[in-house]
Length: 103
Image 1 (cartoon, one colour):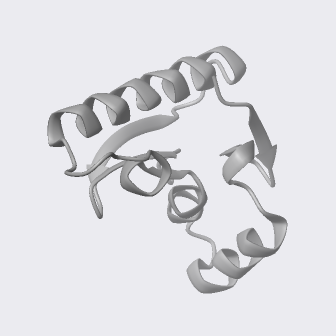
Image 2: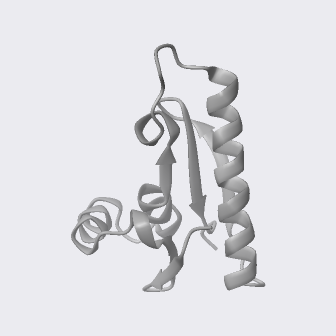
């Protein structure tokens, strides 16, 4: 389960967070908090999990869904009542992202 932190009201996966990179993204994205969260809270399966030889799309998809379920569970436990979205998208392979929609 990931450890989640809150920075300036944005829920972030601690292991994905770097203060300097966060500020770089903030300068680029402005006040779009959902986009800022998606930029920080992303896990690209192909970049993080080693594969012996050929990629197995089914296994990569299963890994992404498992990671998303872990993030979703932690977000619901640590930040009840908040509308935190965790989804798997196809961005250079299966990628898990987490954000709160802009209101």
